[in-house]
Amino acid sequence: MINGNQKLLGLLLSGVIIMSSSCSEDDPIPMEPDDKNIVELAQSDNRFSSLVAAVQRAGLTDALSADGELTVFAPTDQAFTDAGVTDVNAVAVEDLEGILQYHVVPSEVPSSAVSSGEVTSLEGAPFYVSIDPDSKVWINGHAEVIETDLDASNGIIHVINQVIMKPTMSIAEIATGYTQETNPEFTQLVGALSRANLVNAVNGGVEDDLTVFAPTDAAFQQLYNDLDVDGFDDIPLETLKNVLMYHFVPARAFSNDLRDESQLPTLLSNQTLTVDLGELSIEEAGLNTDLINIHATNGVIHVIDQVMLP
Image (cartoon, rainbow, N blue to C red):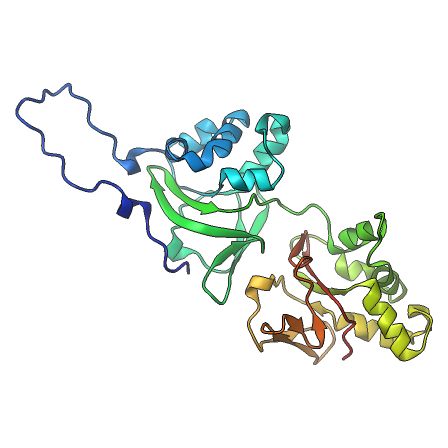
């Protein structure tokens, strides 16, 4: 559950309006904050000018203003800027519509009802909620919920500090993409997976929850030096397969989900991985904090600096 956040209503006028005898029935009645729908509430908050412009461009104003119960995880203007979106008019309408719908849940979810796990968005694709050891709430491992429970007449807004994007590539596709960059990475991992016939194990969709601790090419080279071999082709096939499976966890575990000294099951039978948050390590391998929570259709990649041996 989300803890320690105050509702917007606690900051808003809650006193009773006493009408004097000089007021007529035609005098306008001030709009209470929760009389505003989600779009009106966003328009009244100067943190959401990019979001409002995006909603208008995508043609979603009516959908987010209509009666009902919605929850919007609302990126701030700074979140749009950090995502490289300084002008929503430069984004194709169809793309913008999908991105925005990915931030909406078609039901009202107050902070008291938020828990870790998969959430189906209005777009149709799931996003993933994590609660870290400090009770902070995260979406897809990167976007932090920084304020909760801004109440509207047709739902709730929770404020986030990053734009969230649904993944479009599998773990295998992401790793292969890195091998084709100007400064290639994961060439040894991809080659080893191919030799061990494990590429399909890291290729799939949302139903295939998986976490891969991915050693860098330098990590594999250190392994080759330690074993006095030239490459993965010189490692016995069954040994290579077991080592690789030791790096696979059968769950979608973002770094925010990890707990110190917890034991993570692996695809290698009866073998677990121990988490050390103090050292930011898994077993003897250090986590690369610049390359964690790489989100794929079928799971998560965390980059590590050593090949772990079962």
